[in-house]
Image: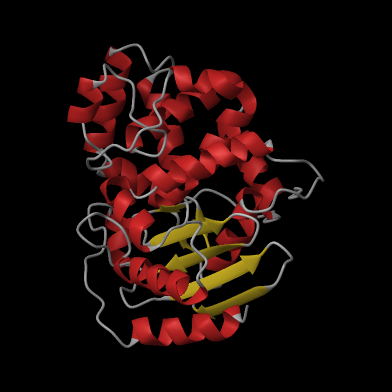
Length: 304
């Protein structure tokens, strides 16, 4: 497969088209990003790489980091995780309080904000130094030894995170947050503040595409069964209330973030990352969604 040729063709087609949507201005720092930025990077399981646009430029990965925290929590406590979380699509916005109330404080899945907060609570309970140990986990997977949280972005989220504060306290009222909401929220905002480039993202998430993936310290990240389950959750829940649309048009498991990034995995083939900051009405990258739809159409690389 000549991925380079197809990526270039699709990139130019999408870039020459419209760039609808809006920046995630409710997080003040994200409102400062160049709205015309557009980048793509693909890494195959046999380590072939190709990127175009600003694929080495770091950006706020936001909710894409939820897949990493989910992976670590699943690795630590296994199937017990699902006693506190569902695995169903939310069918609503990523910060919905109504769905949480209907389910008595059990988030519909680990990739909505409420679910990611429960994951943070699990990690705080089981790790001695959660922030440091989570960073070390990602550094080992990615090989990015200087990866760190962005205090500027984390503080920006805290300054405007009223709805997330409400969600965390609401879950606590049902007994599904065991630690203090303040500690959980601090960890949650830190996780979302991680900055990576498309190249770094496409290499980091190869552990969900490659059955033989090893970390920098030659360790397996997850069992094959665990990786399969996380891919399944990304397929059905990775794009909030646009997850069905993504499955229908793109046909890959993936995860978006309100920083404009999208990461998608084709098991046993590749991981691809796209970044374009302007979001559609569902909170997903407008150009990113269009790029991946056309890319999987031309490469015939949907999992279906």
